[in-house]
Image (cartoon, rainbow, N blue to C red; front, side, top):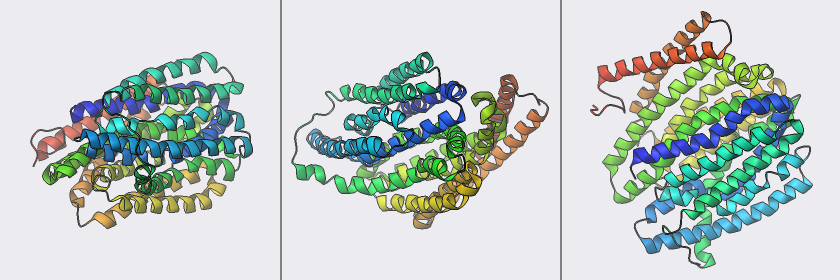
Length: 475
């Protein structure tokens, strides 16, 4: 299947994974309020950390390893079987640990946490890494879309008051499990399980553990933030509710970035095996151009309308979430830049230590800033910590790879699209000043104006320079 079709299917999959909870968020926010959202966010964040431990970095290692073995069916079957056996051992042990947390450690979030158990169970049968390594994105997208649509419908039908928060957790937890089971059926005929020696399974443990360090480091500042706000801030559960709804929009938009990186990583890993260095360089350049163009539009666009969007979308109680969104929006540019380097340079070349160093540095910066600022500034302290962390990651990658990659070209993309984004932000604010009433219609007009300005300026730039990922002819 072509890269474009895979990208389309994977973007759809990522978007449905993130957008459907976002679609239900306004309803949930109005039903359970700030403290309810904060309580659920705390339970889900801890559950997600256990799921990350259960998967042990497989979402990167598995995709890369399967992609490199897919031309040899015998090797493919043995590779798949060895990785899955290791997955069963790690995910099984993590599931037991999760039950220990629920019954021995959890506090007021215990009931919700218990009903999130199927998220940990789903780690036993998660085969996305294999399907993606085989360039099979279509079944993942279609099957998960159906399951998550059904889950969203159940939320509106059965969650009617704050006491129903456990239903919300149960529905999304069950949807995760059913989605994984439905995708497992797709493996039939594409790969076959055969029992391999324990030693052969354990050889995958080391490389997975290396990537797991980086995965956990990333989630220290993407998930642990919420735990730290809940525990350290004054009125922590409420502050976490505000932060959760602000961060949820950023997470949704970053799904586009992850989708492109997920599609490109097996492609580049395969080309790396074939020694197609010129083709790889061309893919990286075009991906960087595309990603920076996208994230700059998203970052400046969201920053321009966040103060109006949050109260309209979540309700007046969450107006401060809009204030948090403004600085958080600019993390998208840093996330996009680092994602291209990670998925198309570092991981395909098996230079995992670079990724580990960069995200560990980011996590350390995040923890230090959070510890200093969250007790005094609450959720805004977590926002500043996230900004510092996301800036650290690409900077560390730059210092390590600056002699190997044309960073001057990549940074020029950031400069150009940042200027265009800044002009768009000013234009949107000017339109907003003439539309003072906070309504969906006025917000739509502002968004349309911003899209028109950004699109027009990009077209002018591409025409004048003969560059741009969307043009056939490039300098």
